[in-house]
Image (tube, rainbow, N blue to C red; front, top):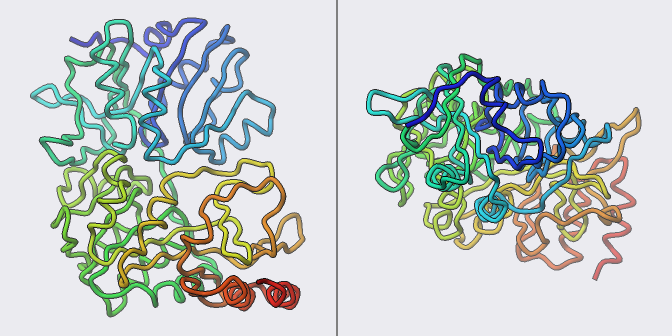
Length: 430
């Protein structure tokens, strides 16, 4: 049976030389991490996580090392400031294996308070850590700490195989908090976002199953679909967003997908408080572990899969950089490749990579459709998996094209300032 401790008492259980594992983003026990940050230093505390949702002071303390599987603004800031933050290359589906091999002594997660039967709901995150929570709870040499937050929504899994809960008897330490969950604001779309979304939505057809990534472009596409003439959609997406909520509330989602019919499927959610309120007790959305949601055989079983993802850079061969620029780690691999690679085995499947044609950096316009990826840039998705690339200037359908043809097609949707140079490079491609 779990001991109920204060945040300070729970934080004191972490030894000066220790290892701690916490989930990605919305599953993080934020109050517990802040309580740990009140300590001045550690001898060697290794924390395994991904996509921090706050600038936790813990990761500025001497002796603390963060091994992150996905960088966000917090990781970039901490790393740029000289703190011990390193990237662990792995896609989201492999995080569960990474966590198992890391075998941290302490595992901590956010959840709802226990219900009348003693079950804590894992709320906004199933992800890659469900099995690790249970393993830590069973192991007498390890410690399972659950931050029970009364403000988290109770979401639904798919019992018996994926109940999306953990029983209080498995938990070593329970910390009760009343903390607002992390909110991801719904950005106002730019003119570029709207133009990209219009081009992309033309490739989303009646009856398809939709996966979207994060950001203003996918949300704008969802809004266009919600107000448009197409429908009978399914949702099978690593992340459930505020945009997908609006699409489902529009009545356009029937979830006649051929697998998990009747339910939208995701492995975590991040968005507005309105989204969290809507998810609370909503059995039309089901949360499953990422090694089920992102498994290729499961993705491909969905009817007419259409994936919508972003990128940092695309070169003229169609290689996609979505997590690094040069030697700088910018984000992470996530489930990008799983959905891009699998959305293409049926003629009716489509995979869209959406990005602005350029960005302005320190007052200088730089291209995002480029001749070659900058030295040191890792390829997130190889050229042979790419179907359609979309910018505000149009859509380039690359599947089935030669190297030269795809280079010319990509040059045509590049920013006009760089288009002539790219055309010249494209004509030399073989």
